[in-house]
Length: 323
Image (cartoon, rainbow, N blue to C red; front, side, top):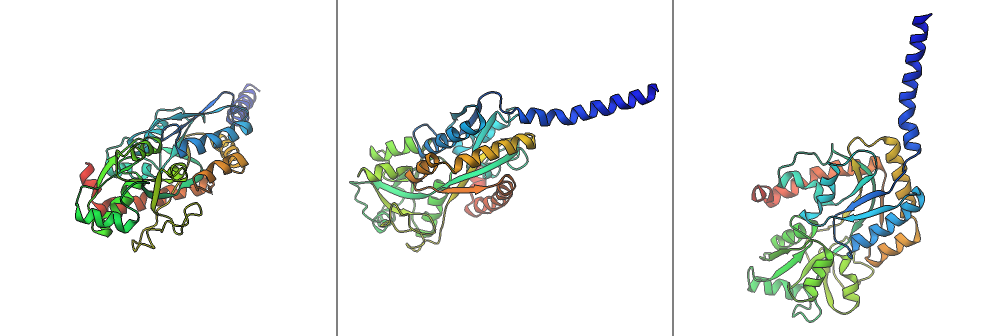
């Protein structure tokens, strides 16, 4: 009899242990959630992600609070996950630059193994802009000046080794020109710089749209597979004879070891928010669109991108320069 009671007690304890995570996940969240994003307040990432967070807050019943951590090429939020508890209360935007990081700097963590991929939500559209009073009326003007004045034409981007920076370096290689790169912490700072004449051009996501519409900037080219509806007169790089297409999906990640039940709860909340008019309107403001990937699809995208970025970094010789 004692042995039977011992066995029964063990079974009850095991059942309770298995049920505990499920019960905890069902009560999640019981406090506010922090979503760390990679760029400053006031830029396109901040505005669109705040709209997404507001929608998710309504589904989850707890605030999703944006925490801006700009700099380091957009990789600080992913690094913040490495110090966070895997309980779903700290999340991070995962820009494409995260997948380049191991090839350009020494890391103590792995972007694939040490991040739980929750959901992909959208992606950036990119282009090159100049002040409205610039002497460069077209890309041909820009390229001709750069050839005549090697290294004198400067442009700003949202940071070293970000997609705008790397794409402009590829453009320069293909066009046979030499440019001077000036990194900024994000779109808001970059737009102030180019409108103020501190740089001659800016390579950025379509965070420049309001400044273009206000008549302060001119678009020389865009980088998608086709022209953007908002800027139908701006040619693509492909149309200009530069065989490049650049877009940059991004989503939400959590710390390694976050319980699957919590990941699903978060995924479902953000998925519902992606479908809300407020979020869609915020995206439209910057010529962005929803780009949905499930947790499984997003993880596969991360693995594929990680391999592809290595090939790009190696081709451009940037890994050796950064070490």
